[in-house]
Amino acid sequence: MSGIPNDFDLSAAWFRKAQGDLKAFMEAFAVRLEGAIPGRVTVERQKDGLFSRISHAVKVTVEAQNHIYVLALQKSRLSAHRSKVVRGVTLSTEHMEVPEWLGGLNSDIQALAEQAGSAQNVLHDFLMS
Image 1 (cartoon, rainbow, N blue to C red):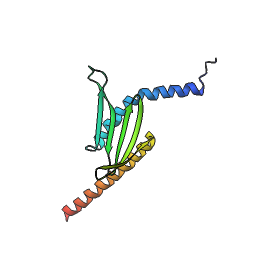
Image 2: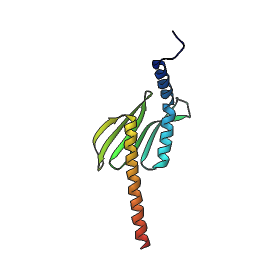
Image 3: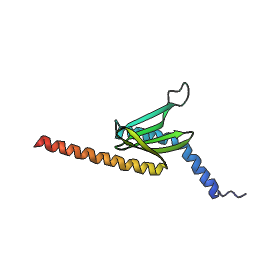
Image 4: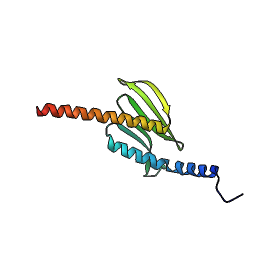
């Protein structure tokens, strides 16, 4: 055997590194979303042990206009799904790959920002007239 790592060894090393970073990723993601869009984000945290004071995010739920986005860390794996909601009724739920889920969440957050900006402008114009 040679001392040069092959593609399999490199891929396995990257996979192990990514798995180790998932807890930190989820916690950072949860904190960022809680601060960015308060009132629309719910975070479930789990203690690291029975007597531990340290906890980490295991599930992040974001309520957009017509979708509810859920990202969960289960058994060292990320799972993502998006539910279509109309007037409080869930019509469908689709499981998604994390990059696709993040793209959809980003689009819906942009739509929320545009709607809030428009409402603010209308209110400002009304109050100033």
